[in-house]
Length: 299
Image (cartoon, rainbow, N blue to C red):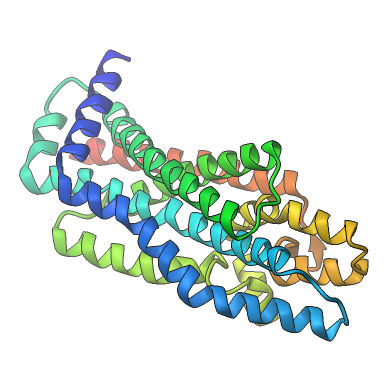
């Protein structure tokens, strides 16, 4: 346990000491929020207004703002919890490049402890950044349309915590075989460009083809995005019901923004989404630790 604490402390200090790595991770959520609000905001608002007008329902600008803001915020956090983790978890690659990894492996510290040290330090760093991003997102929601309760905020933060755990575990598995800056840059670019589409952050999965929807229903990130959507928009849907919106209209909106997910035609409950995400975290961490253990046994 002492070795693990020392490794986590060492890795965390090195991460925050590298100003380039830290500020890149910190500024990413802010840039994404500006881009989302500038470009995706109008797209989301237009789609909501068109859908409601087609149903013959009038809606206030504040309610539209809360609906669009909830979708933007959930999309932002869903992406950041994974992409920031890939930035925060580059220390293991840097240690290979500088030779520090070799020095650590010749010590009596077990490879499993070394692996957990990298994982926990990256988890701490990513959580700090993503919770800060969540705070900025809540301020944004306060100005565009606030319909959250204290319970919604708590659940939203829990979703961020679980998604960061998943993102850190995933990045640990992907980054472990990397050994050069070029490889880490290539992986970071691919993840930043593609993950948002795969998890349904940029475009709701309900708008994909049925075949692609079935494929994406096997990915844990899909359920993490849906959990964020449900808790960011729960108050908006409750307000719609109180304003006597037709139930079928509310349900159609829930389907369109992926609050309702379907696995081969069966609706997935929130408890099942949490279960899928939790099991995926455990499996990913186990795979990562196993990769480290096998690495030493072969050397």
